[in-house]
Image 1 (cartoon, rainbow, N blue to C red):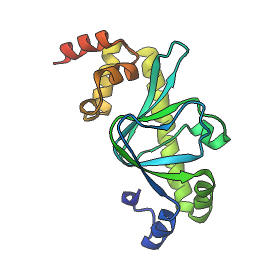
Image 2 (spheres, one colour):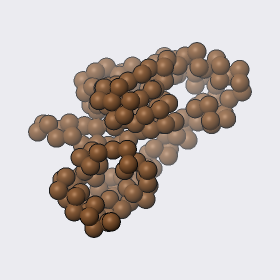
Image 3 (tube, rainbow, N blue to C red):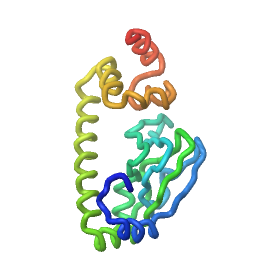
Image 4 (tube, helix red, strand yellow):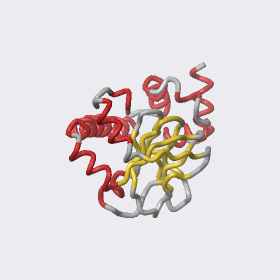
Length: 182
């Protein structure tokens, strides 16, 4: 967040007092389904996935978050409800957590933070709508190519089974797509 240049040095110092640095290992859960979600997380380093597990224990990945991205189960966070989604580390991860109360206090104290989160939220909503549309209208090959276009370096950081889950295809289908793309 320091890179956004939206704060004076003093403002950033004040805000940083509300942020708690947490370190997670690969495979750790930051949020598990049914947890009460009390924090939003700014990923400082590493990579996480936000996913839903269906009744057949199949994992459906909604999104990835990496350096300088904010992530949580936003509905559970804002509504003070139990999580529907899980947030798990794909890599060793360092993240700053910001509690619900500190989040809203910071937005009141720093109007530029409200503007920053609004802009981030709008971009996130647009990305989610595009992702849903791609799942509804694109074939697996087109979804794979779109993923490589949007996240060119991410394919090097995730396993093929994780990518298959994100694309909504089987591991075998992804292997065929991978061979065709080479």
